[in-house]
Image (cartoon, rainbow, N blue to C red; front, side, top):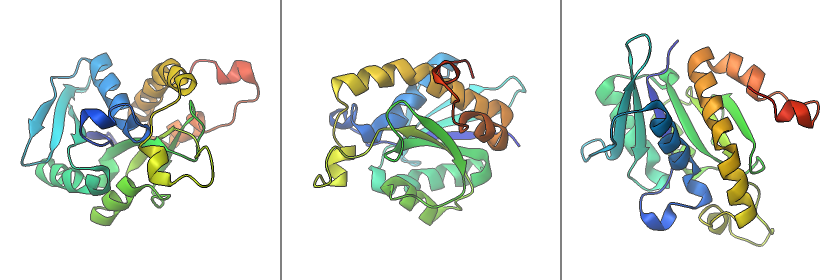
Length: 203
């Protein structure tokens, strides 16, 4: 099975650009740039920014950044899937994961939203059978902090440095998911490294 749609989740607006919640936008932007995708174009009807690139087999891969706010991410995704006739099984969603440390990444399929408001809306509008690339943004710094304040906050300088250093790995994981499929990607990416050398090794 090949993927036809990759979605990066985030909030529109420059004030949100560097927040934890927008790591999905950052990863898909970097992926589009690396792959030489066409320019992003705003589509008012589909409520998102869209870009396309051609795969080696001649098929087209659509890239989407919903222009709704995070808790209505499913609106744009549902419209795009309906317009291009893309089933959930042919979609990858890239988003922030507070249950993973900064720099970590995992692949999953199916399952619930795990408290992520964007996924709550997406799952509520389409089947939960899509693949997910979960980018670690870390837990709240203190229990008293509101979760919204955490995910809408910016990375510390140290974490920002780690995010930048990890971007190539995020893109490699996304490439592996597209190339090998979810099961093979999960078996490789989600395995726990035996030591530091393994962790820093090539995918």
